[in-house]
Image 1 (cartoon, rainbow, N blue to C red):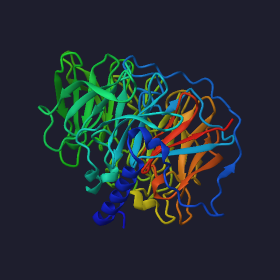
Image 2: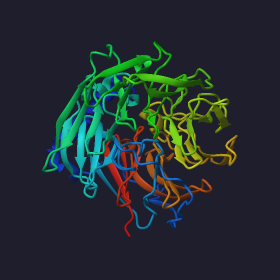
Image 3: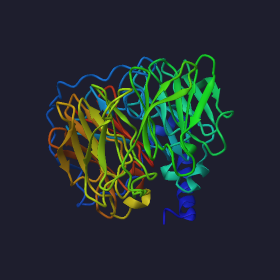
Image 4: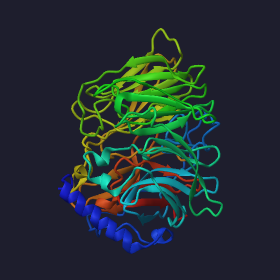
Length: 501
């Protein structure tokens, strides 16, 4: 089975040989991800092309002064981690799918000022990549320190986001990565746009203890760089000018783990979720992390299939009018909204149960748009074996709206037909579509680009992405490029979807 060490070694060897046959970086875009032939029971397209139905009245997410423009900076789009775009995605007209075999999963996609793809890809060929958005040809690569193909042999390899799984593109088009060696490194593109050069290296090894691997880093709205490490719940800051590093620990052992990224507000504050709590931080005068408030969320104590740990699976999502949201780990899971103010008589706004008891979990950030939140059910995805030979996960999407008076929330709709095992879905305010990535139940394992109606949750259309193991996205996020093309990383490499007209 795939989960065994021997099987994983066979898979790695096969992918390594394939990558070697493809050639150097400049030619990697020439080979598509191999797909199993689609039989007559696997349609290429379902539904009908959409007519754009823009969503109006949504306050814009503030542009973060130290990040690339909204939609371009990283896996969750902006400082608020909204996972929403003002630009369009595909409508489903004469759709065209293209793929690039890399034998590494490009899980987090950003876009530079020229519209090129900047991404970190983990697997057989781990590295920071610069990719042509049209041809998917690799223009340049820099190895990720501390990452190796042998990492795929380690337990939990397909659930490990540290050491480069998260990164961000800053306001100077530089990629900032927390490495597996305990450094925060800043990379700038070469003048010829054919690779990257290391321009700044912050050494955090004097603060991090053995086993504390960097998970994510982001600047706050004042430019102070924050970072988190999973083990012991490390929260720290780096002064970008002096390199001074300060850190605290929120827990030890099983309590206080930080599996995901975090959100930054527009007043210097930072929101971080552990497997027990949601916390707001502000920087003290010397730049040290200072806890402003903390809340313990409901927790069943289970690490449900579909979760990396026994806590929330979400990166916090900031909303306008002073709200922040996560999911808890109750059974059934709740979408929980809190007030962000430093002091509040009643911190919790609402806790709305979503999906069925015994079958609700997520490992992805909520989509936030104004006072609306979209949640995806990932219950049942433990690793790639969970979606092999026709298996898939428990279906589910739901929309929760904060009430107009701000004193509660309402479940607007639930979709209980579409199974999206692990993708980070995205919303386009320009088209009114939620873009996700779903799995069919045929034994050959088809994967589909899927568009849902934001207003009703109903499926608008589905487009076959490919058939077989290489098309499993394994926690990678969907990204909408500047020209409306959609991208998603998979275990085989990177896939694009665009309208033909």
